Length: 286
Image (cartoon, rainbow, N blue to C red; front, side, top):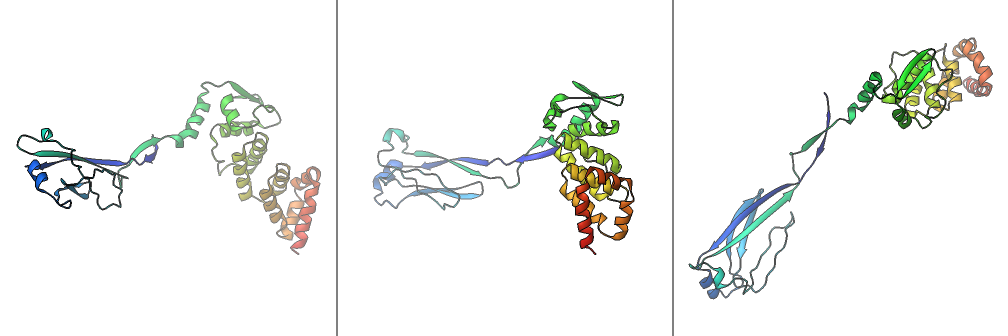
């Protein structure tokens, strides 16, 4: 099964514990009088070089966190912080230093599987299996089982009338679109795209409506341009309408051929006001 992946970047942490051993610490602290005198040790953590310094004579106590831009910081031990009881019998003091470095990983990603890209296929399989179906479309003696929850989620007018004059094949294409919203096949007849456009507008399927408009725009021709223009006007498809008018008025030959079609005669009856726009556009091109 093909799955997409989403990647989450998690910060990396490097932690290192270092022991700074000071032999004869009691004597050393008693004899050091200059605050600048110190004992140091170097180490490397996460690609950064660190230098740990101990200033026995200092009277200041301070600890801070480093930012990536910091080059170094001093950590002082105040007088009285250590006692003779804390120093080993040999006079040795051991200071434990823990250094933790956090940074964004450069290459290491944790990739989590994301199956959302297969949602349309899964819903399509659910439709075909009819498992859990709770509504049936009955058109022209044929029945098609579907799922109310999915239909309601995809269509804002789910409670609209289910039965009408839709042809059987239109419903058979529309219900799968409600489930999985797959694009109209490039090989579909323009007539089917017209029927789907009507159904998509009726049931509030904006995505399917746009797909049908695209399909009809690519397939504009003499025989169906008038009926497509009528549908574009009736179902508020301004871009499709403009393309149809542009095609018809594009040349006198196109205009004469379209006027002779049955679709044009139907256009005169259903949307006569569109003819005014059409004629104005045709005259402007002369």
